[in-house]
Amino acid sequence: METKSSIFHATHGVMTKEVGVISGDLELRTTCSDNGVLTLAITYVGAEEWYTLPGENYHLHDPRDHEVVHRMLTAVLERS
Image (tube, rainbow, N blue to C red):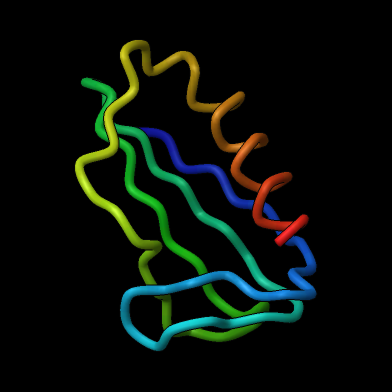
């Protein structure tokens, strides 16, 4: 299992399942299991409570793509 984390600034916000839209300085955490199951979590920088992004059952065909997918997600969420 591999976890990646990135900090970014979301001016317009990111939708979460639990609390709706959050914005500002955020941290994205993606975790990929050995069989490609991908989980996504987001929090305010320095906060302890993590939220989930909408959607479910994320699965990578090849777990080696985790790094690229994580970077793409960070870039897209930062533009939100």
